[in-house]
Length: 471
Length: 102
Image 1 (cartoon, each protein chain N blue to C red):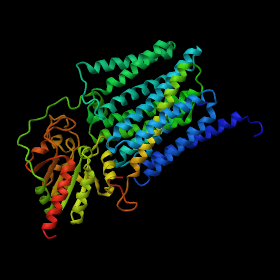
Image 2 (spheres, rainbow over the protein chains, first blue to last red):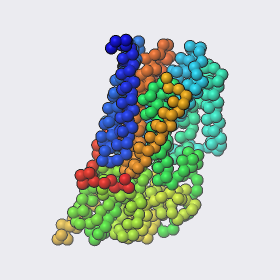
Image 3 (cartoon, rainbow over the protein chains, first blue to last red):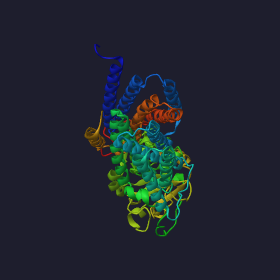
């Protein structure tokens, strides 16, 4: 160690740890993009986080050590416990909430930096100041926007708030926040102006998210996830910290791509999601015909004579906690030599892939689960399609009715199956508030019941037929 | 020091890396991957710790404390929910292919 001070050694150790952490993050995310390696991916990224956090203690000194440990405890304990407890159905809003925390953290870092520059009275390089302010702006928007997204998905805010001239108000609010930020960078760091800047940025996040309907929320959460990544990267530039720059930028880019993939799956350009009022526009054509009810015993008979059964689960199935009973029914069908598949719309559940998680939780192997593009050509040869808790994603109006607000959204062509059974609690409309033409189709029968009760009675009726029919 | 063009290079290369590593993700992993990348930007915790460590006034310490608490919540919560989701992904065949286009 000759010639090196302890401080230099610690500095080197921390920098080396940040490099290792950045590498582990990139490898971890890459592994998380394949089902075979995904589990190892998150563990690897977790090790990276531990290494980086531990190494940071080499740089923090002892002045505010108590504050740091208090902050860690305040953050880690409730988040860890809520994460362990949250039901799989509530996962999307939990991700939104944790994402909002990250955005808030980046914004708070920006705030401390601005305050420090302000009280020191020296002006830092303009590039640092500009990036720090931009990171704070994006982080604030991401935080308040994510909180609104969480409240909407958690059912605490179940209305869209729209009023005339909303886009103009939102644009003005954004320009005001941006203008205040520019004033901070070029005309001086007045403490009151800093407060106004954060107030406007937080307000814009709220205003921007309020008019967006629940069905579009996944895309919005993904967008805020990418934005938080960017905010973290920008604050990383100010702090001269490579781990923040690289991890933040990688998440920003990966999150942007993921947002595009999701928007594509819903056939809704991102600009359309953000700036048009989904579900509030066109009414769609009036639907002819009526909904024809059926009872569980008749559905069981249909299943008994069917060769090929496709189950189309939606979020409503998970809310009713019916996935375990549905999987029990599926196993009975498979044991009776029937071809059973699960058809998943890319945005089934509250986020793309959410339904796969819920089915996996019930024990459904992922090779029985088919994507929309793979299963759609198979519906004409399907004897019985069971739709349980899905609504907008099976609405044929998306293909045929140009006046429908969901026109153009890719849907599962369930209507092409020989026989369709829809399990539904009542006659109401779906998440997007649109009537479903499938429910009125000639080959559709409605099984009006709670999802779990319906699945349970299908299981017992099917067993009764098998027992009585001398199988 | 990371400055000017060097910063721009790091930013550009990291951005391309981010796009490249998830380019072929199957739909079944969209939610866990979003959650996993949400965990990774929890690294903001490190920045928050450094800022709090060098805070000199009470307002700076309080906002720094908020930054650390929020960053720690992002990292801890993000890890737990991602790990719980991925733990459940099993195939009926060992090392089978995904239901997606993967």
